[in-house]
Length: 388
Image (cartoon, rainbow, N blue to C red):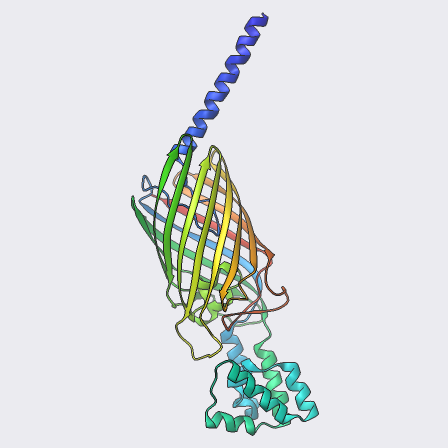
């Protein structure tokens, strides 16, 4: 009897080990990197087997203090129409400090204000025309207070619920893949008369890569590049910081070029991804001298656990300023999420939170001189995709 129990126990252990090894082998060979796990970062190019055509959409929603540019212009135009003495000063509003303006108006130090304004504009690379210089000379103390009121209008972000929708299609071949994305921005705000949808920057991505089996494990790599065209409408800028990594998708002033590389390792039920990318944003339109080219490095890692048809993931993404991107640099984000694999359909739900960022949540930011709003304290991401 003892011998029988021992044999039965060993048989059960052997069967369990065989089942576990079979599942590990199945995951490592058949599913390695085929179901994209990260919600934010890059991952290894999937194989072309059974995934020649892919399509999907990612939906994000976040409450932010957003500067809606068209609404600011409407308020400024309305205010200026009833205050014609300040109309000529509208071009200079972005260089003014409200507290300084009111203090100078109360003290009557007009010459100090004019000198400070000229100095700030020169620092921003603005060369005054004779007409502009004469306009500054003609400013009165009453006009200074009117200008301060207009600055407050321009610099007062509204509490707005923002959302983005990013439908995409991709063709996946053995050695490379192509992907096109059309970001769409939207807002809801009871106090503002807003159009429901805004177009973002269209993008095209090309990537190549390979996967290699290492016994029961799989290793993969990819290199690629993504280009964003400046097709976004003006108010889409408000989405640039809802998810701070989305700035190239919605800032309509810039053309963005993003080369990147990704590595992945899958062992049994765990997949690990590591990526890095260089983001270079080139000013493409607009006469605002304060809008400048900028660049930063974005890097991150993700860990994904698989259990049958489900995936659980945690990822970290950080941004490092390279040139004129101090607002974005110093940011660290954490995203946790879950996915369900239902045949050819992949459904995901993620939650993104900032662990570190430049400035404070009460301050609004400018990205390369473009006023956008404040980053979201939490960003909810819904992701759906289908493969054929």
